[in-house]
Length: 475
Ligand code: ADP
Image 1 (cartoon, rainbow, N blue to C red):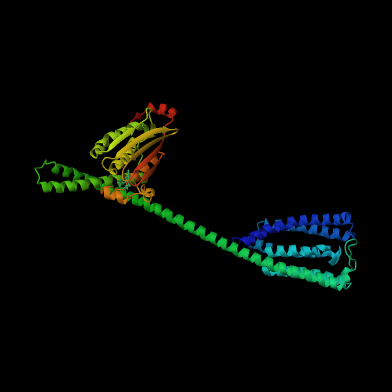
Image 2 (tube, helix red, strand yellow):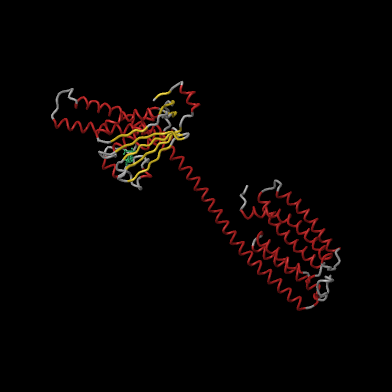
């Protein structure tokens, strides 16, 4: 089945509109006759006019039936469109004939409703092709002129509008010429303007339709590309998972062997040998850290990260992390303040993940705060959530870097200079883990003044807690 163009769709819709509108016009004719006779005291024989109106009613009934038969039936799409085109032409032509008959039976050229030809011209310009609109305009002019001239020359009788117009006006050449000129010029100008406006509108609509089709096509292409990328990304994640996994064991073995040698279990070492091996050990540690972080990220991405969730007291987890990291802070002469509320902070979470999140945040604060600085960790319950803040007085993050720090491998220039071993994977891991627990993480920072990382996690409801806590409350 061929697709309908917007014009064809509109044409078919307008066919119904024309038919409906004809009933309104018919009511208008009857109302006008009544008003002219009763209200304005204009006299003319109404029989023929009612006859024409009745004829119009019958024709419109036929139009309704015919249009329903073809447009709503199951005839082919091409047939429907062709029918709609012919049908619109026939309807407008018939309307012109009916209008001319109504004018003829009620005053001829002296009837002011002769101006109504303009509506037919405009409707034709909107619905039909330019050529058909001009032909319909020509038909309107021919019909009007035929009637006027036939009455003028006395070939057909003139029905005067007594009480409205000069009964002899139709015989005055000046009247005939003047009215004809005004009508012809009005209709010609109207058809020119209306068809050119319609042509522009149609062109614009066609352009919009073309653009929409292009957009749809592009959207489809994007969707396909996206699906391919997702497959590739999955493959890449799986590959990364395998490689990092394969690398981890030998690297761990290298590191532990290095430890054995450095610690002198295999005999004492020359200072130079010791220094070289210590450097190798440091690099191996860094590499192992990177591999562990890559492994965590890959597991999270591949959805292969299901750990056990339980009800935890977050303040205890945080205290545990602080306990482990305090020696590092002290080694750098940093003040590490912890402010926990008196009430418990219950969350339903995976213990290892929570430790990973806060270890990352606190160790970053230690890494990026120069000696003598201060780190403050505080937590509180806020309605349905638990908020934890890790603030430091360290190197801070510039406004241009701030939106990127949660991206994988992103490190600021300043951070690279401060700590060469960083991976740029800690914060992406924090973000993923927090989001996997239904929470969010954000950062506020000012260069050279410090940073404040804030984690929000859903708190466990009292009811849920009491029900589950019997099973497992740890931390
Ligand atoms: P890493 O610390 O290994 O570089 P992260 O993903 O943990 O990787 O952090 C990404 C970057 O965010 C860091 O390189 C640093 O530029 C910035 N950053 C994170 N925490 C802080 C902090 N407390 N103070 C200043 N910069 C920070």
